[in-house]
Length: 322
Image (cartoon, rainbow, N blue to C red; front, side, top):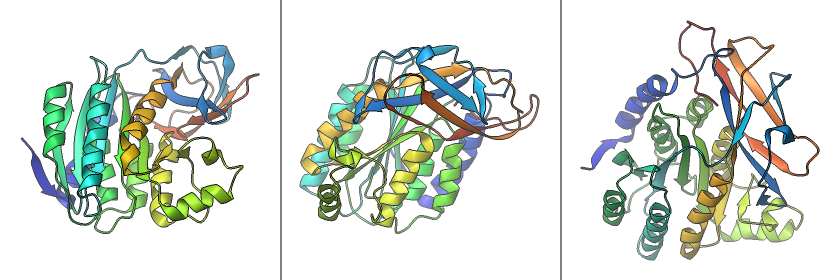
Protein backbone atom coordinates (compact mmCIF):
# COMPACT_ATOMS: atom_id res chain seq x y z
CA UNK A 1 0.00 0.00 0.00
CA UNK A 2 1.42 3.38 -1.01
CA UNK A 3 1.52 6.06 1.66
CA UNK A 4 1.52 9.70 0.60
CA UNK A 5 2.34 12.62 2.87
CA UNK A 6 3.26 16.23 2.34
CA UNK A 7 6.99 16.87 2.59
CA UNK A 8 6.90 18.29 6.12
CA UNK A 9 5.04 15.34 7.60
CA UNK A 10 7.36 12.73 6.12
CA UNK A 11 10.60 14.43 7.01
CA UNK A 12 9.36 15.00 10.57
CA UNK A 13 8.91 11.24 10.86
CA UNK A 14 12.27 10.79 9.18
CA UNK A 15 14.04 12.90 11.77
CA UNK A 16 12.92 10.70 14.63
CA UNK A 17 13.53 7.48 12.72
CA UNK A 18 17.03 8.54 11.74
CA UNK A 19 18.10 9.46 15.24
CA UNK A 20 16.54 6.40 16.87
CA UNK A 21 17.34 3.71 14.31
CA UNK A 22 20.76 4.96 13.35
CA UNK A 23 22.41 5.98 16.58
CA UNK A 24 22.54 3.00 18.90
CA UNK A 25 25.24 0.89 17.31
CA UNK A 26 28.65 2.38 18.01
CA UNK A 27 30.72 3.68 20.90
CA UNK A 28 34.28 4.85 20.23
CA UNK A 29 36.90 2.64 21.84
CA UNK A 30 34.53 -0.29 22.42
CA UNK A 31 33.16 -1.49 19.08
CA UNK A 32 34.95 -1.69 15.77
CA UNK A 33 34.39 1.14 13.31
CA UNK A 34 33.53 0.21 9.73
CA UNK A 35 34.65 2.54 6.95
CA UNK A 36 33.27 1.98 3.46
CA UNK A 37 35.97 2.89 0.91
CA UNK A 38 36.14 3.23 -2.86
CA UNK A 39 39.55 2.93 -4.54
CA UNK A 40 39.94 3.95 -8.18
CA UNK A 41 42.78 4.33 -10.65
CA UNK A 42 42.07 6.46 -13.73
CA UNK A 43 38.37 6.29 -12.93
CA UNK A 44 38.17 2.50 -12.60
CA UNK A 45 37.69 0.58 -9.33
CA UNK A 46 40.81 -1.13 -7.99
CA UNK A 47 40.21 -4.66 -6.71
CA UNK A 48 42.25 -7.24 -4.82
CA UNK A 49 43.57 -4.98 -2.04
CA UNK A 50 44.39 -6.28 1.47
CA UNK A 51 44.37 -4.53 4.85
CA UNK A 52 48.12 -3.90 4.60
CA UNK A 53 47.49 -1.78 1.50
CA UNK A 54 45.59 0.83 3.54
CA UNK A 55 46.73 3.55 5.91
CA UNK A 56 43.95 4.91 8.15
CA UNK A 57 43.97 7.80 10.62
CA UNK A 58 41.27 8.74 13.13
CA UNK A 59 41.61 12.39 14.19
CA UNK A 60 45.17 12.27 12.91
CA UNK A 61 46.14 9.17 14.91
CA UNK A 62 47.26 6.12 12.92
CA UNK A 63 44.99 3.10 13.42
CA UNK A 64 45.48 -0.61 12.79
CA UNK A 65 43.11 -1.91 10.13
CA UNK A 66 42.04 -5.32 11.41
CA UNK A 67 39.87 -6.49 8.55
CA UNK A 68 39.07 -5.72 4.91
CA UNK A 69 36.01 -7.14 3.20
CA UNK A 70 33.95 -6.35 0.14
CA UNK A 71 30.83 -8.26 -0.88
CA UNK A 72 30.32 -10.11 2.41
CA UNK A 73 27.44 -7.98 3.71
CA UNK A 74 23.92 -7.73 2.25
CA UNK A 75 22.97 -4.54 0.44
CA UNK A 76 20.18 -2.18 1.46
CA UNK A 77 19.31 -0.13 -1.64
CA UNK A 78 17.33 3.06 -1.05
CA UNK A 79 15.86 4.31 -4.34
CA UNK A 80 14.91 7.99 -3.95
CA UNK A 81 13.60 9.25 -7.28
CA UNK A 82 12.66 12.64 -8.71
CA UNK A 83 9.31 12.33 -10.51
CA UNK A 84 8.65 16.03 -11.04
CA UNK A 85 7.13 17.42 -14.23
CA UNK A 86 10.38 17.11 -16.22
CA UNK A 87 10.15 13.29 -15.97
CA UNK A 88 7.16 12.51 -18.20
CA UNK A 89 6.56 10.35 -21.24
CA UNK A 90 9.70 8.69 -22.61
CA UNK A 91 11.94 9.85 -19.70
CA UNK A 92 9.60 8.15 -17.21
CA UNK A 93 9.60 4.96 -19.29
CA UNK A 94 13.40 4.99 -19.35
CA UNK A 95 13.53 5.54 -15.60
CA UNK A 96 11.23 2.58 -14.97
CA UNK A 97 13.30 0.41 -17.28
CA UNK A 98 16.47 1.32 -15.36
CA UNK A 99 14.83 0.57 -12.03
CA UNK A 100 13.60 -2.83 -13.18
CA UNK A 101 17.14 -3.69 -14.29
CA UNK A 102 18.46 -2.57 -10.91
CA UNK A 103 15.93 -4.73 -9.05
CA UNK A 104 16.79 -7.75 -11.20
CA UNK A 105 20.49 -7.28 -10.36
CA UNK A 106 19.96 -7.51 -6.59
CA UNK A 107 21.32 -10.59 -4.81
CA UNK A 108 18.96 -12.89 -2.85
CA UNK A 109 19.97 -11.36 0.50
CA UNK A 110 19.66 -7.76 -0.72
CA UNK A 111 16.69 -5.49 -0.04
CA UNK A 112 15.38 -2.29 -1.59
CA UNK A 113 13.10 0.57 -0.60
CA UNK A 114 11.30 3.02 -2.91
CA UNK A 115 10.60 6.72 -2.34
CA UNK A 116 9.45 9.06 -5.11
CA UNK A 117 9.06 12.80 -4.90
CA UNK A 118 7.88 15.93 -6.62
CA UNK A 119 6.52 18.62 -4.30
CA UNK A 120 5.11 15.69 -2.29
CA UNK A 121 6.85 12.53 -1.11
CA UNK A 122 5.56 8.99 -1.56
CA UNK A 123 6.91 6.11 0.47
CA UNK A 124 6.00 3.13 -1.70
CA UNK A 125 7.75 0.55 0.48
CA UNK A 126 10.34 0.29 3.19
CA UNK A 127 13.21 -2.16 2.72
CA UNK A 128 11.97 -5.42 1.26
CA UNK A 129 13.45 -8.40 -0.55
CA UNK A 130 10.24 -9.00 -2.51
CA UNK A 131 11.34 -8.30 -6.10
CA UNK A 132 7.87 -8.91 -7.53
CA UNK A 133 6.43 -6.25 -5.22
CA UNK A 134 9.19 -3.81 -6.14
CA UNK A 135 8.58 -4.30 -9.88
CA UNK A 136 4.85 -3.75 -9.41
CA UNK A 137 5.45 -0.54 -7.45
CA UNK A 138 7.87 0.76 -10.07
CA UNK A 139 5.36 0.11 -12.82
CA UNK A 140 2.73 2.17 -11.02
CA UNK A 141 4.71 5.39 -10.41
CA UNK A 142 3.61 8.58 -12.17
CA UNK A 143 5.23 11.98 -12.61
CA UNK A 144 4.26 15.64 -12.27
CA UNK A 145 4.78 18.68 -10.06
CA UNK A 146 7.78 20.54 -8.65
CA UNK A 147 10.83 19.24 -6.74
CA UNK A 148 11.61 18.59 -3.04
CA UNK A 149 14.94 16.80 -3.33
CA UNK A 150 16.27 17.98 0.05
CA UNK A 151 13.25 16.67 1.97
CA UNK A 152 13.34 13.45 -0.06
CA UNK A 153 17.02 12.83 0.68
CA UNK A 154 16.33 13.20 4.41
CA UNK A 155 13.41 10.80 4.18
CA UNK A 156 15.68 8.30 2.42
CA UNK A 157 18.21 8.50 5.24
CA UNK A 158 15.47 7.57 7.70
CA UNK A 159 14.81 4.29 5.90
CA UNK A 160 18.21 2.95 7.02
CA UNK A 161 17.55 0.11 9.45
CA UNK A 162 19.66 -1.00 12.41
CA UNK A 163 21.20 -4.07 10.82
CA UNK A 164 24.69 -5.06 9.71
CA UNK A 165 24.09 -4.50 6.02
CA UNK A 166 25.63 -1.80 3.84
CA UNK A 167 23.28 0.94 2.66
CA UNK A 168 23.38 2.63 -0.73
CA UNK A 169 21.05 5.52 -1.53
CA UNK A 170 20.53 6.03 -5.25
CA UNK A 171 19.28 9.62 -5.45
CA UNK A 172 17.96 10.43 -8.94
CA UNK A 173 17.38 14.16 -9.55
CA UNK A 174 18.73 17.29 -11.19
CA UNK A 175 19.17 18.71 -7.67
CA UNK A 176 17.16 21.86 -8.40
CA UNK A 177 15.01 22.07 -5.30
CA UNK A 178 11.96 24.33 -5.35
CA UNK A 179 9.63 23.19 -2.57
CA UNK A 180 11.54 21.57 0.34
CA UNK A 181 10.84 22.54 3.95
CA UNK A 182 14.26 21.54 5.23
CA UNK A 183 17.55 23.24 4.45
CA UNK A 184 20.45 21.55 2.70
CA UNK A 185 22.64 22.16 5.77
CA UNK A 186 20.19 20.23 7.98
CA UNK A 187 20.09 17.22 5.69
CA UNK A 188 23.85 17.15 5.07
CA UNK A 189 24.39 17.17 8.83
CA UNK A 190 21.99 14.23 9.16
CA UNK A 191 23.84 12.37 6.39
CA UNK A 192 27.12 12.75 8.26
CA UNK A 193 25.58 10.97 11.25
CA UNK A 194 24.56 7.85 9.32
CA UNK A 195 26.42 5.16 7.41
CA UNK A 196 24.30 5.64 4.28
CA UNK A 197 26.43 6.14 1.16
CA UNK A 198 24.72 8.45 -1.33
CA UNK A 199 25.23 8.00 -5.07
CA UNK A 200 23.33 10.80 -6.84
CA UNK A 201 22.46 10.26 -10.50
CA UNK A 202 21.51 13.11 -12.79
CA UNK A 203 21.05 13.38 -16.55
CA UNK A 204 23.91 15.06 -18.38
CA UNK A 205 22.81 18.36 -19.94
CA UNK A 206 24.39 20.41 -22.70
CA UNK A 207 26.12 23.01 -20.54
CA UNK A 208 27.75 20.33 -18.40
CA UNK A 209 28.83 18.41 -21.51
CA UNK A 210 30.49 21.56 -22.81
CA UNK A 211 32.45 21.90 -19.56
CA UNK A 212 33.56 18.28 -19.87
CA UNK A 213 34.79 18.79 -23.43
CA UNK A 214 36.67 21.94 -22.38
CA UNK A 215 38.33 20.18 -19.41
CA UNK A 216 40.14 17.18 -21.02
CA UNK A 217 42.26 16.52 -17.92
CA UNK A 218 39.31 16.33 -15.54
CA UNK A 219 38.45 12.82 -14.23
CA UNK A 220 35.03 13.17 -15.84
CA UNK A 221 36.60 12.60 -19.24
CA UNK A 222 37.45 9.04 -18.17
CA UNK A 223 34.01 7.86 -17.11
CA UNK A 224 30.55 9.36 -16.41
CA UNK A 225 31.08 9.49 -12.64
CA UNK A 226 32.43 12.86 -11.56
CA UNK A 227 32.95 15.19 -8.65
CA UNK A 228 31.84 18.81 -8.54
CA UNK A 229 32.81 20.89 -11.55
CA UNK A 230 33.46 24.58 -10.75
CA UNK A 231 30.84 26.68 -12.45
CA UNK A 232 28.07 24.10 -12.26
CA UNK A 233 24.70 25.27 -11.00
CA UNK A 234 23.52 25.03 -7.43
CA UNK A 235 21.63 21.80 -8.03
CA UNK A 236 24.81 19.97 -9.01
CA UNK A 237 26.61 21.44 -6.02
CA UNK A 238 23.93 19.99 -3.76
CA UNK A 239 24.09 16.52 -5.31
CA UNK A 240 27.87 16.50 -5.14
CA UNK A 241 27.77 17.55 -1.48
CA UNK A 242 25.58 14.56 -0.65
CA UNK A 243 28.05 12.27 -2.41
CA UNK A 244 31.19 13.86 -1.00
CA UNK A 245 30.06 13.94 2.65
CA UNK A 246 28.98 10.28 2.62
CA UNK A 247 31.80 8.80 0.52
CA UNK A 248 29.70 8.25 -2.60
CA UNK A 249 30.09 9.62 -6.12
CA UNK A 250 27.95 11.73 -8.42
CA UNK A 251 27.11 9.90 -11.65
CA UNK A 252 25.97 11.54 -14.86
CA UNK A 253 23.75 9.63 -17.28
CA UNK A 254 24.54 10.78 -20.81
CA UNK A 255 20.81 10.88 -21.58
CA UNK A 256 17.49 9.48 -20.39
CA UNK A 257 18.06 6.45 -22.62
CA UNK A 258 21.20 5.48 -20.69
CA UNK A 259 19.66 5.34 -17.21
CA UNK A 260 19.60 1.54 -17.22
CA UNK A 261 23.36 1.40 -17.83
CA UNK A 262 24.08 4.19 -15.36
CA UNK A 263 22.07 2.58 -12.55
CA UNK A 264 23.81 -0.75 -13.14
CA UNK A 265 27.19 1.03 -13.20
CA UNK A 266 26.42 2.52 -9.77
CA UNK A 267 25.54 -0.90 -8.37
CA UNK A 268 28.62 -2.52 -9.89
CA UNK A 269 30.91 0.14 -8.46
CA UNK A 270 29.33 -0.10 -5.03
CA UNK A 271 29.92 -3.85 -4.95
CA UNK A 272 33.63 -3.24 -5.59
CA UNK A 273 34.06 -0.99 -2.55
CA UNK A 274 35.98 -2.15 0.52
CA UNK A 275 34.83 -2.18 4.14
CA UNK A 276 37.73 -1.45 6.50
CA UNK A 277 37.34 -2.32 10.19
CA UNK A 278 39.36 -0.94 13.09
CA UNK A 279 39.03 -0.34 16.83
CA UNK A 280 39.90 3.29 17.64
CA UNK A 281 43.02 3.71 19.77
CA UNK A 282 44.61 6.87 21.12
CA UNK A 283 41.60 9.12 20.45
CA UNK A 284 38.89 10.51 22.70
CA UNK A 285 35.38 9.14 22.43
CA UNK A 286 33.26 12.27 22.14
CA UNK A 287 32.54 14.50 19.20
CA UNK A 288 33.39 14.51 15.55
CA UNK A 289 36.14 12.17 14.33
CA UNK A 290 37.82 12.96 11.03
CA UNK A 291 38.78 9.85 9.05
CA UNK A 292 41.63 9.84 6.54
CA UNK A 293 42.26 6.78 4.37
CA UNK A 294 45.24 6.48 2.02
CA UNK A 295 46.93 3.72 0.07
CA UNK A 296 50.28 2.41 1.24
CA UNK A 297 52.69 1.82 -1.62
CA UNK A 298 49.93 1.57 -4.22
CA UNK A 299 48.62 3.94 -6.89
CA UNK A 300 45.01 5.08 -6.78
CA UNK A 301 42.50 7.55 -5.40
CA UNK A 302 40.59 6.77 -2.20
CA UNK A 303 37.03 7.94 -1.51
CA UNK A 304 35.48 7.54 1.96
CA UNK A 305 33.12 9.46 4.21
CA UNK A 306 34.65 12.40 6.03
CA UNK A 307 34.21 10.96 9.53
CA UNK A 308 31.76 10.01 12.27
CA UNK A 309 30.38 11.20 15.60
CA UNK A 310 31.35 9.33 18.77
CA UNK A 311 30.23 9.49 22.41
CA UNK A 312 31.56 8.26 25.73
CA UNK A 313 30.38 4.72 26.60
CA UNK A 314 27.09 4.95 28.47
CA UNK A 315 26.40 8.39 27.06
CA UNK A 316 23.61 9.59 24.82
CA UNK A 317 23.10 9.10 21.11
CA UNK A 318 25.74 7.10 19.28
CA UNK A 319 26.69 7.05 15.65
CA UNK A 320 26.66 4.03 13.35
CA UNK A 321 29.69 1.95 12.49
CA UNK A 322 31.08 4.21 9.82
